[in-house]
Image 1 (cartoon, rainbow, N blue to C red):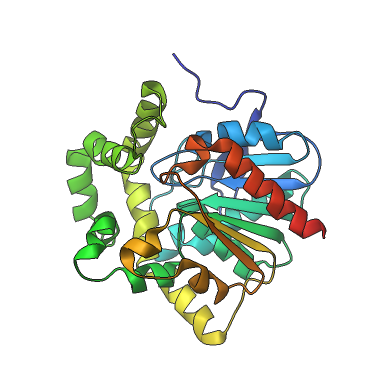
Image 2: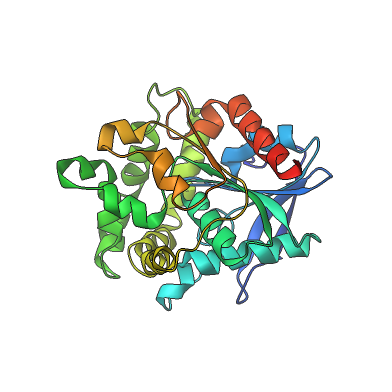
Length: 296
């Protein structure tokens, strides 16, 4: 049986907030860098990038709450899977390894956790890297008309507790596989065993994954809208790398991000959604350049 662990990394169960334990891989020495995964994946998506960056960073790679081998608490309130709560998990994990500040790079769901961590705890997040996502409020703003079908799963998982979980569980392997296949343009990013790992991990986490997405249509959106109204900004260096979704859906991603972060850069990449696995050298280089802005 294949072990889906990052070669050369040690693994620990680390307390997050409110008694939730996260499964965390860690290796390297130097300034801390936290890497957060997206959907429908686990920390394993960072395996190649993490090994390269561990040469001069302490690289900390958790499974988010509700995913992979981390705890999956029952959604007892909207806050259970709010990005504010998930961000507090990450601060607790970093602190357990002796770091009160760190670089933070997230893909997809992990990037949304990163944005909330950076807004709520600006002294802790030294720089923020974002892979292939928009801020929550902007995501809902740009999804209009028939073009919004690209994000149909957001609407399904936004529904009240019960029905979306039952619908997804009925066809869970096919549901999660559909995203791995649709978002991998040439079908070459995943080996069969890695693809199956992501499907199996997600099938075992239907309720918590839906709760994570439900929060994005509720409590997370409320937080973003309040921050926008208050004029809150990401004050650390921010780097965004993405597919060119804007040309398809009619928005300017660089401008949307500049509204949240004056010190931001934006670049597009010729890769599918799973860019950290499809083009790990390019993503490692992107993160290295971002960390150098923190030193300048």
